[in-house]
Amino acid sequence: MYDTYVVLQGWVGTDPETIEAGTTTMTKLRVGCTPRYRKGNDYHDGETSWYTVNAWRTLGANVARSVHKGDPVVVRGRLKTDVWERDDGSVSTTLVVDATYVGHDLSRGTTVFTRTSREERQPADQDPVVKELNHGEDPWGPALTSEGEPMPAA
Image (cartoon, rainbow, N blue to C red; front, side, top):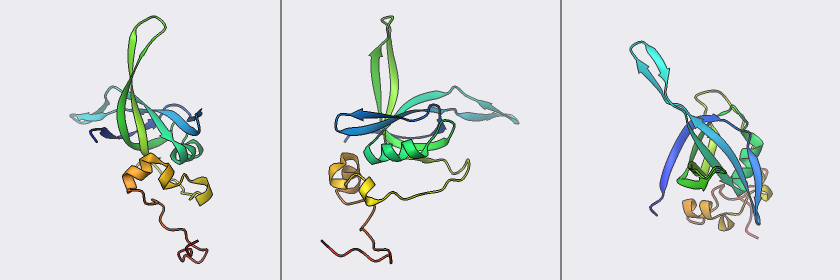
């Protein structure tokens, strides 16, 4: 309830890596965000902040198929910190975003959308993130016939 949600606009710094995590999968990538500011008539880049983005289940599978190193993206998700110890004993902190949405930044170019089939998607009642955001309802809406009509109830 008191989670911190963020929206990142940046560039993918690593090719997505899919990891098997128990009975589910996660896709992990790094996103760099560089602020740009104007000073007089000139534009300057600020310091780049790097975030690890974790995308779970169907979102992760779609990210792995759609996003590549160098792509401009927009990411929304929960921000958390990962504190870990390096080999030399020093402590480091990584900013991690558990993504709820990932997409190409259309202010930087165009993309083509291909809808995944229902069989490829994680059912809403089995995906806690989708369940929380959509109150248990399928975010893709009802299944449709090839004519665009709702499928009859089973």
